[in-house]
Every structure is written in structure tokens, then in C-alpha cells.
Length: 373
Ligand code: PHE
Image (cartoon, rainbow, N blue to C red; front, side, top):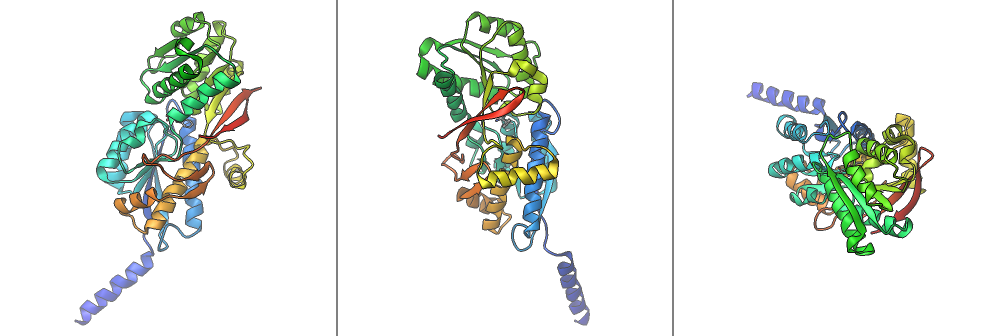
């Protein structure tokens, strides 16, 4: 009897010495590969949010966050591997990630099947959250982004004829091209899309498609792609004699864009999630803290990763639970102010948010305007 009592006492002392148990959260982003700046910013934003929450005492009952971050390399197969690893090997309670829609579309079904709540900071393709009720996002969706781009081209750039060039193997660029086309045709008429050219994934020579595009004499060229491809496409379009404006989406947001595209990306405009020039105090406070920590201006990827982490941590705190079903239910009731705006979710687990339009001017990003839904 005495022995048993001693054992119990020892166990209790052991538990209290170990302290509250950390809560494991998975983070995913493409830190290497075709869009590496996306992953680096994403990881930075997430880590900053984790530090702030842990400094405040963690999620609930003094339980701190242990972030396990994985690189998906911008590749859907690699993405599926790391989602599975985080869930099955590490036993994470929730996942924040990933960035590129084509990779998130590979990971979301794995989260849904395992009952693990997931929030993507930046995957804008409409299909992502339609995977199921455990799948959320912190950003607007491409039907809105494409509409904003097309309306800007028609109304502000006064374009009557538009062309688009996109990656046929990438859900994000294909979807965005379709959304742009649909809105532009509504505004400017059925025959207003004068060229609509797909290219294979991984291409570096776009001259065949661009020759057709330029022969059709568009007033504006829509390039809904990631910064690497955009830089090359813009350069080759200028070499072939295209002088008009170019419009794109959030995939343009990288310091690498002007390094790759040089002067070819001048007279370029893109839709994005946030601008560091926004004067709201929550934005300016974030920009200041991020600059102090990383010595760089936070791009939209950093801001949205920070926001997505805040949204997930807030839900876990309110759920006071690490069970997937409880976190999922708390996510549905989200109402929180974050850097990129106020977040509440619609029936498809998408937030309703405004977009900003950014111009490329003298090699720099310049905020032009905000567009509300
Ligand atoms: N929206 C892109 C996608 O869905 C990812 C992205 C977001 C890229 C924000 C840059 C900035 O694939």
C-alpha cells in the first residue's frame, strides 16, 4: 500500500515538473523550388505569430505551441507526403498551409479524411475549401481576384481587347485566366478576348504563344502566374514588340519579379491581398515588428501566414481542445481582426475580403487602390 502511494506521488511530481504539454501544430510552405520566396515569407510570418502567442502564455491551460514546419517544394506529390507525415508521424492538432493552390489541393483531402482542421494562408483557387468542412482559408478566392483584374483592365486601363497566357498544368493560373475571361467578356463583349493561350508547366520559352497573342493586338495582356514565369513571359513579350500594359494576380508578389523581369515588368499591375502602405494601425504595427525581426518588408505571403496562424490559434483557444471536431467548430464561429482585414467565414469557409491593386513603377511596388467585394 505504502509502495503504491509512493509511486502515485512520484507520478504526480513527474507530471507537474513536465509542465503543461505543448500543442503540436503543422506549418507547410514551399521554401525551395519554383516559388521559394513564397515559402520563406510564409515561414517567417508563421514563426512570428507563434512567438507572440507563446509569449502571451500559449493556447489554453498554459499549453504552448510547438510549430513543426515542412517544405513542400512547390510540388503536389511532395505536399501530400509532408501533410501525411505531419498528421501520422507528428500527430499535429491542426495544419496551417500550404501556399500554392495546386499543392494545397493535394493536401486538403488528407486533412479532411483524417479530421485535421486546416487553414491555407494564400491558396486562392475556388476548389480548395470545397474539399470539405475541415478546410478553411485566410484569403479571398480567384473568382473575385479575376473579376477585380478584369474590371481594372476595362475601366482603369480602358482596354477593349484583352489576351491571356496561362499554365495549363496549374490550377491557380488556369482558374484565374478563366475568371478574368468571364468578367472581361461580360464588360467588353463576347469577342473581346482576342487570344487565350495555354503553355505547358515548366516551359521557359513562351514565344510560340506570345507570337499569337501579339498578332491579335490586345490592349492588355493578362498573365496570371507565379513570379518566375511572369518575369520570363514579360521579357519575351517585350522582345517580340508588345508595348501595352500587363495585369496579373497575387503570384506576382515577390522581390524576385523585378530582378527576373527588369524593365519588362514596368507598366504591370497585379491584384493582391494587402499593402504594407495601408495606414491601419494593425498593419503598421505588423510591418514594424516584421522589419525589426527579419530586416525585410513583409509581402502578402508573410502577412497572410501570420493572419492564418492567428485565426487557427484563436479557434483552438476558444475551443479549449485539441480535438479536430472541436477546433473545426470553433473555426466556423471565427470573428477576428487581423492584418489583412476582418475575418468571418461564409458557408464555403472563405472569408469575404477586399483586394488591393499594386503597380510596378521604377522597379518598385506602388499601392494604387483598394477594391471591396
Ligand atoms: N494564390 C496563389 C495560389 O493559389 C498563391 C499566392 C498567394 C502567391 C499570394 C503569391 C501571393 O496558388
